[in-house]
Length: 452
Image 1 (tube, rainbow, N blue to C red):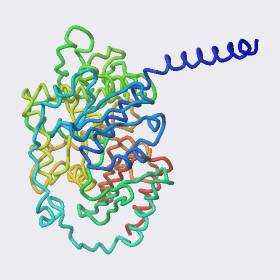
Image 2 (cartoon, one colour):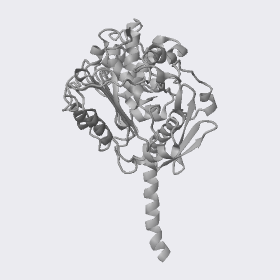
Image 3 (cartoon, rainbow, N blue to C red):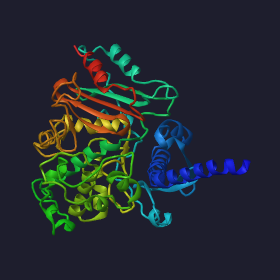
Image 4 (cartoon, one colour):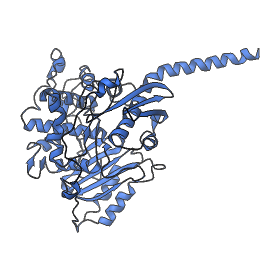
């Protein structure tokens, strides 16, 4: 009788647990996909220590309960949630890391690519910004001691401080005047740091170059063959640039959604994004969508017309021309740049990218982006209330109330930022693995107050 007395409650508990696991199980693939991809990129792209990655990068939300097995010989990472929902990410030379899904790893890893970037050796002899030789320029209008103190305050012990700032770089009038890196997290001036949605702004730059080359017209309809027989055929490239496509989209990272399906369950991010149905008239509503950026990536791949040329394009036409030598843009298993989320570079190289836009797309007399492109970039998307331009964020609506209205910036997950403030001659880069407790507005306000 005693056994029967306890048997029913135990069975009820078991049934409830089974129901919860069944309902929540698909979400585990988000956690394990994120964990595998993040660990693989940190280890094989950035050269970081796995234990630091687990305790710093992955120590949040449900992801902290995942565990990863690293195969250094075959350059792969398999992540699971207590042995369940396994996902594997593999590294490919020049193309970075991607999840393999059900495809054999060796089939994906047979593809590789050598980015045409300048070598790091000897860059310390080349003056900034094309190289890493920093001038001892003194700007009397800047309180450099106070500035360095503000930068120091942006950091903290990663074991106790959830800000987890990895790097800060400050440029003034194009010169690098201050920088700091988290030694506790193993970050150096050469460490590639994941930019997340900063990548979207790289897609802006690629589109700008193609526009200058007259291979892309922002006012033309998007050349997506799958859209020709329905209302999506009227969506323009400009609609995509301003995230006003009208496509149905759900940018929810905590559930099975459009974005998590695209990033963690699809081998082809472009296809996953273009398959989303018509929802509203194009150009009528602004809606933040990582899928929109990956549509742009696929559109540009088709316009360039050759995969070798496509993969070389940002390196030849942008990065190598402005001194960026650490950048690695990662592709999905199908070979598309995951323009929404996956690019990696040192903090100095992210600063160089911001400097290109500070200089209106011109680099030492070389026109990288066409005339008027940066103004186009800063034109608010309809219905965005002045918050968003063309793959860049804006401050027209004073999202950052103590920063100037002309501020525009790149914004990525975990607090990645490239702030560009033309009126104050500033480019400020903050990179990290969290932004909990980090006040970007206060950080900028204090930096601005160091300039007399």
